Structures are given as C-alpha cells and as structure tokens.
Length: 199
Image (cartoon, rainbow, N blue to C red; front, side):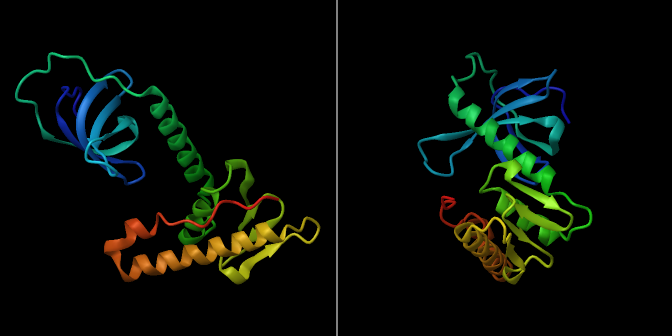
C-alpha cells in the first residue's frame, strides 16, 4: 500500500466488506490512513458520491491513474452533514456485521440475521444460542425458514410476527433470484419489505 496518494489520482479500492470503490482522491491523511474519494454518482450524472475510507480496513488498493499536473487548488468543500450520515450508516453496518458473526451458525443464518437487523436497531436483534431473537417477541430457529419463525406466547405481537415471516420469505426469494440470475443480484438484494409495523 502506498504511503501517500496525490490529490487527483484515481484509485480502485476493495473494502473489508468486499465493496469495490473507484474514484478520484480529494484528500489523504497519512497518519490516520483516512482517504476521501470522489466517485461517479449511482443516481445522477450531475452529482458525485463521496467516500470516506480508512485504509487500515481495506483489503486492496490499486492506483489506476496518477495526475498529469499537480493540483494547486485545495479540495472541494464537502457536505459535512452527508458525511456524518454516511459515517453513522457505516458504523451501523459494521456493528450489524460484527453482531451477526456466530461460529456455530451457518453462513445462510448469519446473512439472514444481517438482513433482519438492517431494519431494526442493533440492540433489538440478538443471538439467543442458535436462534435469531427479535425484541423478546419473535425468534427464528435453525434452519431459519419461514416455518421456523415463532412468536413468544407471553408477548404476542401478530404484526411483528407476520412482518418477520415476510422478511424471511423475501430473503429466500431474493437469494433464489440472485442464484438463478447473477447479473441482477445487486439490484435484487436491495429490495426490502415495507417499513416496520407499529407495535
């Protein structure tokens, strides 16, 4: 990994989540290994996405292009509010990833855990042995299919129970579509059920 990157360089980076990011260097701090990249927006040709990456947690960094001329101007102004939101989302994603790891559970079970936890706060979805526990009201037991979703009879919440069943069903439908048509897996995995129902 390079000790320094010039502003204007184009890099291709693989994060610890196996996400691939390609963009132009806006800023780099050697001491903290923090890098700011400007990337093409996925939603608009007139906008750019800005990624703040810690290279200590990146598995691969490749320099695609070096700038022909030194950059004399300072980096562009950044929308700090958007950066705060992205940082918070990344922290939430990392926490879900860490909490989903369970050495005794299948990869499929851990992926389902992450899919469910994405729609709740981190403390609301936990492991109870091999079971995925949502609040103290619904659990999903191995092998983590729709028929393995059960409600706590003492704390019955039919809406939450039905919602979790739909989430599990949707997870396996999306997985099947991705396996049958790999070219659409990125769009299929983004689909999600309706918002969480009120208690």
